[in-house]
Amino acid sequence: MSELVHQPGAVPGEGRDAAVAVHYGDPLREQRLLREGLAAVDLGHRGVVTVAGSDRLTWLHSLTTQQLSDLAPRTSAESLVLSPKGHVEHDLHLVDDGERVWITCEPGTAGDLVGWLDSMRFMLDVQVEDRSADYAVVGESGDRESVDGEPLAWLDPWPGPVGDTFAYGPDTSEHPGAAWSCRELIVPKGDVPAAVGDRQLAGLWAWEALRVAAWRPRLGAETDHRTIPHEVDWLRSAVHLHKGCYRGQETVARVKNLGRPPRRLVFLHLDGSGHIVPTAGEPVRWGEKQVGALTSVARHHEDGPVALALVKRNTPVDVDLTAGDEAPVAAAQTVIVAP
Image (cartoon, rainbow, N blue to C red; front, side, top):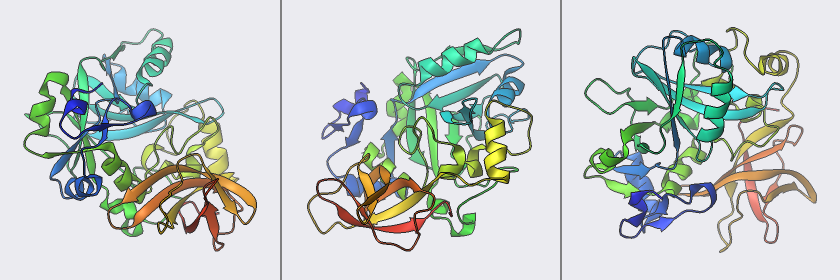
């Protein structure tokens, strides 16, 4: 458990987010303060992994989806680890400090990531280490990279586009993610209070609401065992289309050049007039037919109940949908990945 869970008013989360607080008593106010840069979020449940050694950048470049071989110190990048069939297995938030690459990853995945990376070292000069026990992540609003003398920070590149890639959704100027500016500070656990400073603490609900409104996919929420990056518009920030071979590249190229993603991510405005809002995992229906499922649900401080969902690619874009099982609510669809 993060020590910030014991702050006054803290309400712990559930499942993989149980180690941090989802709010501290006023989630909508926390959300507004976070967007204004006046709050910090405890992301101490995220894993922290380092890769040291002279071959670290070229090695990670060869294994993952992003162009990393020439990554400059204190420059952030996002890269995916795919299965041989192109399914998303890990989402890596990377920043190099000049001596080692620091990676933050989803809660509970650091051990699997380190195990897989270790199995791929062969004779190269790389050393992989799980630093989750000693380092923590603090989330904040911000639109610049860290500099010398500051804690190392990963700056989220969403919505990109980053490098030679492709966007299934709108251009950056028209993308709601253009308002999403966030950083992850990577600090020793003892330095977390100093990293938060005199700012208000905001819970994970605030962070997630802004993420959903920005159409930003999250591993384990918008992904399952068969998700490919195209379905959730993840090429735009994490996939370079003309780099060397990596595991899963054949699927990435084939779907981009010849096919269409079998599912597509949509943004939903949910009817909030009732007292029940559906939760992630519940079905999305067109009439009586189930066409998908909710992946993330949040209460936005301006837009009310909102959600992301994965639906079948051929679901019409102009039909009325409902979301939820026992108490379905109307769900207005906004296209993210065009069919």
